[in-house]
Image (cartoon, rainbow, N blue to C red; front, side, top):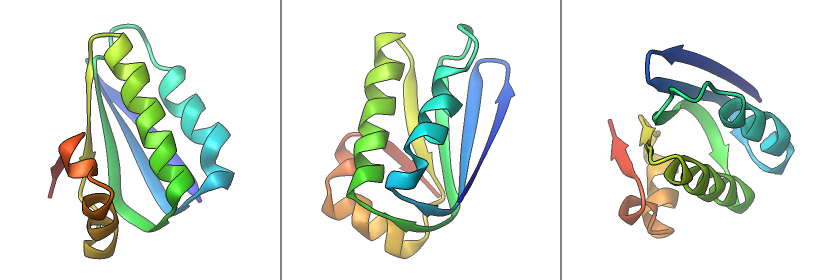
Length: 100
């Protein structure tokens, strides 16, 4: 698993490559907690995510809490069909904007 972070003005994009599971916890947290105070939008790019488990869903919820505490917003981007199915079954489509 690899996490790539890029920042453009007020938007931070966190790209998850490979498996997004419990072993990603520290790296994922560091990816969003280490951002500048000017960042108000967080995009989690799932276009190259091969697998997601329940601990990853929990990490996304922690990201959401963190972002909302800063009056920002977060969204999930480009999940593969099988990842989107997991997100929908978990009602994450009610919590996050999920874009193609």
